[in-house]
Length: 227
Image (tube, rainbow, N blue to C red; front, side, top):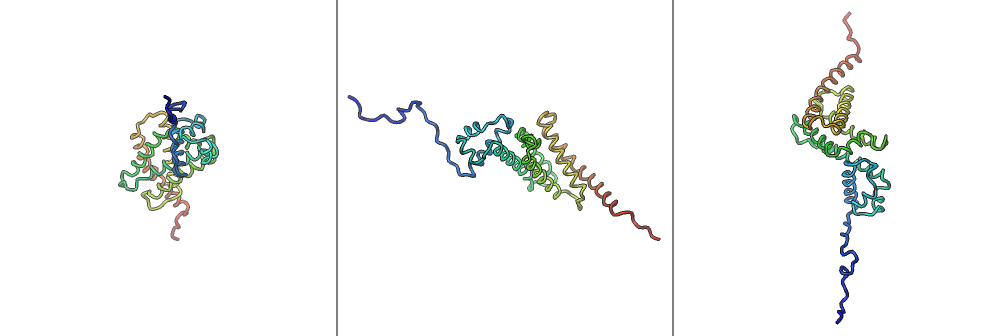
């Protein structure tokens, strides 16, 4: 005798399995998810090796939805670079609760930990990203300005001559250059590199103040001698 019951959909499914439903996120949460995904992808592979198809598939969304947030692959990449730079600055400067003698080393530890974890993305930021991309260069300058502002504010000096600003800017460039060399060669361990950078900064400040004071004295002109 034949059963009058209809087979269930699961029983008639040609594949016998089903895709999990896509997770619905609000706009901010979805954008944050995509940026985190992009950061992970671009931290391990170069720009040309990451496709929009792969990003959409990994995020379980359509390409159309991805393009709703980022109209082009370049827009997506720039947003990822901007987010990476923001995270680098925030992690490095989140040291206000650390006692002064260890504050610099703690900040450098956080900086180098980020460099170590996000090597390719860090290199993309400080080598200009896609060629000499103007937006990436603007992100670099903003990042440097944030660090310079913090260093100037916390410099243990009464005056801040132009030589100090220039010297601190140079130290920031030194940190960037040595970090890029480090992720390529790893000839020092992280602690040794941190200590090198930390020990150099007070000497940079000292020499800047010496030359800044000499410049100020020279600008004032020779002292008058009594008749």
